[in-house]
Amino acid sequence: MAGLQIHQEELAGRITLRLEGTLDWRTAAQLRHSLEALGSREVVLDFAHLSEFKDTAVGVLTKGLPAAHKVQFRGLAVHHERMFRYFGVSTGTAPLAYYTPEEILA
Image (cartoon, rainbow, N blue to C red; front, side):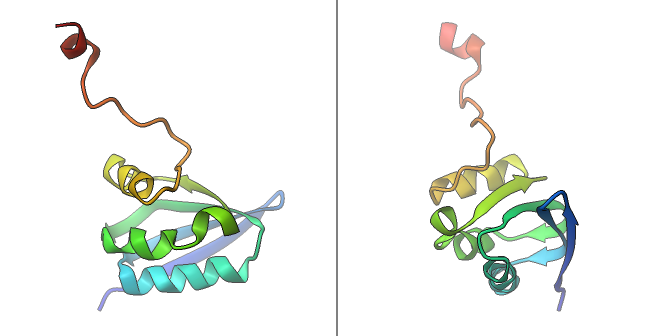
């Protein structure tokens, strides 16, 4: 079974959790516990090094996340940015337009 490695780095008061491996509902629960242990500290979640990111992980991660934590996201694919928005969590990037400007003007 593939797992999740969480590498914690602290720089200038900000904690970065660099994620490697597989993020699914089970390992997302592990990540939530790591976030809860950090309390209200500012955290950056770096998803760029994941080999697999299951959609089910988003539901587990977002439960109670917006109000309780100051979390920034890095390295998310467009699909996962959209998934976080579906659960009411802003990833800090503007959503991409569904239609291109040329299609709108046509």
